[in-house]
Length: 112
Image (tube, rainbow, N blue to C red):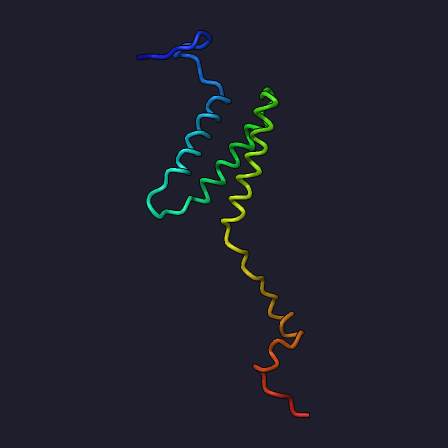
């Protein structure tokens, strides 16, 4: 069975908007269908957030759909941020540690 719409033919290219919505639905479905005990993929959540942001920025999008995409993008951003590992502590350069006396216990005392 073939479903055709009155405004498009099989030879016409699909709308970029429709492709974006279709890919977003596919990504969201895959995010929720993980195996037993598998954690949701953070990269997939990040891609979903980016697709929602892209949809919300389309120039001719319906205002209700734009607002929904913006709200969902914010919610997915929270999911992504919560799953990211904490940043590694930054180390000071060697000279800065030496000048602060961070090496005091590692050097021999100077004869005075």
